[in-house]
Amino acid sequence: MSFGDLISILFFIQDEVFIQIDEDIQRHNELLDAIQKSPSEVGQIVARRRKDFTKEFFVHLHTVAESYYDNPTEQNAVAKLRSECLAAVEAYDTATENIEALNAAELKLQDIINSPSVDAACRKIDNLAEKNQLDSAMVLMITKAWSAAKESNMMKDEVKDVLFHLYKTARGNLQRLMPKEIRILKYLLTIEDPEERMSALKDAFTPGEELEGQDIDSLYTTPEQLHTWIRTVVDAYHFSREGTLIREARDLMNPKLVQKMEELKKTIQDQFM
Image (cartoon, rainbow, N blue to C red; front, top):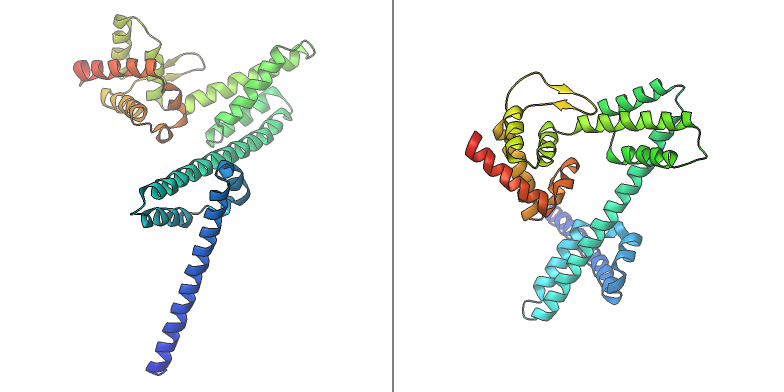
């Protein structure tokens, strides 16, 4: 191959790259134009064209916004549109994940209900927990089924008993999947009396045999580990990073509980570290 042939090939590749880039930009601009024409319908556009809202598209939006360096009004408008698109995509993805989770949970529940006996059904729940496939969507479905049965006058007592048994089994398994520090923390937050809370803290930091039951647990950890978990939750609250928490800890994200956790954190620092 001559040098001239090599140059020709390089120019050909370069042209192909430019063509691809140009096509990508045209596609991004077309999507941006559609959004700008109907800014109130961003959610609907995302639902129709989710695959077009790529990382490259958002990079393009950032580039477009930066290009208006001499026009702050237009720059802010594009930046705002970019934020709205990000929020719409996140909402769409979350909803899709939730639907998929509920569909999967429904199939699992159907399989459990079709078990030949209560023991077999409970074993299936235990197996799901062992495989880390017993999620909150699954437990929610079982809880709703049990709740509906409990309040119904049309359902036989045997069916209610079965659903209650499944509910207790699922709830117990989900509880055991929760990190023990979160379980200890949630228990400590239920104690109002300072002396009783201090006693519970001492118990939590005293090594011993760990027992786990559906209603009562005997668990222990170290001051450093519990302090780390508390700090993680509190920091997530203050810096609005709820999404960084495991789902079992997200129900701790409210002002009153955070205030209690701040007090607990200080107590652990002062008394145990």
